[in-house]
Length: 256
Image 1 (cartoon, rainbow, N blue to C red):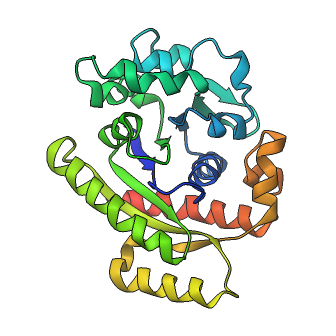
Image 2: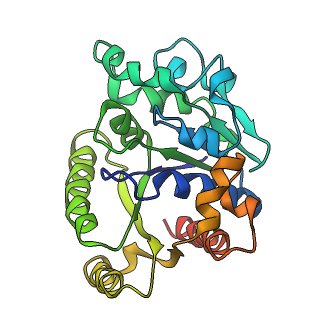
Image 3: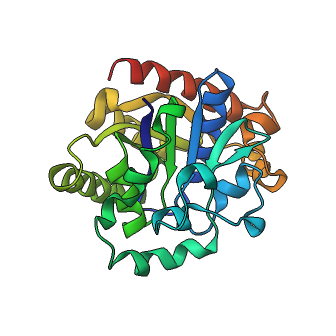
């Protein structure tokens, strides 16, 4: 059965979508069967996987509201060679529409159960807020991958997210745990980055992934070409780091 992981951080602009898309492509490159679930109404993970969100007839929105099943909404990322449960702007309305629904926090979990046997990994790209959508992601997942920049404000946001995960674990999903913290957009020339990185290792120990994702222009350019960075420029430092991260994830899952 698939291992299901949320890529989550309540702070915006920390590389969640870049991490979700490139980890999906990195895992696919090493022979894993991967489904990427786009839970962000902006649909950036959908576009980054090379799927035109404007032409979609069924998305995660219809799946959450019971108007379509997951299998019928899934699309293949031709560039990344992984499957995508896509999103577009319609998803913004799901927040309000789900309030009245039964089992509203577990709509995604129940929908993914039908396709779980088809994959080794399911990765859920969550929006940058603690919303009903993020809650659905956390309730569906076995664990959370937290991408974070090594800067002061990131540390503040991290404590809020850890508390949220503890509450969801206690009240809604006893399987949920933090899989690891991924240091992204890292610039070794900045002293503060090195200090925050050392603090993370000190406080979280082996919960901090060994692989560090450097700040990399090629990763930032890739989405405009509709492909993951690991496919767009496999030789770039950022792509190499995400492929190594995929390998580290597989090893970490084996020991779970």
